[in-house]
Amino acid sequence: MGIWGFMLSDKMLEINDIAWNLIIAGHGQNWIPKDVTILFREMWSVDVSPNLISWTSVIASYAQNAHGEGALHILNEMCAFNVKPNLITNASASSELRNNSRNNARSSFVIEMV
Image (cartoon, rainbow, N blue to C red; front, side, top):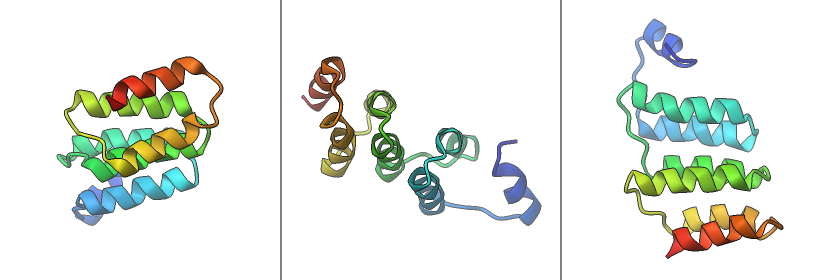
């Protein structure tokens, strides 16, 4: 059982994708990277599929906290799951890349955008 699973089973609560998105976004703003990743993965274990907002929240949390490589990894994974990034997703990912001096990260992002 994951970090939220015990709370949910004890209280007999069911949370939907909106609640998951809020929890992930909150952890992302406070930059608790381990929790952001765990929570995102745990959504699947309770049969809640991440939606575009979930993916974007995780990407934004990595990018806003100067982890461009992590943002790109999640963006690539998102595309592999056939979830198409929107303008907000791309802006979230690119915010870090504008400040990133690594050309390989920039080129990876351009490839993903095409």
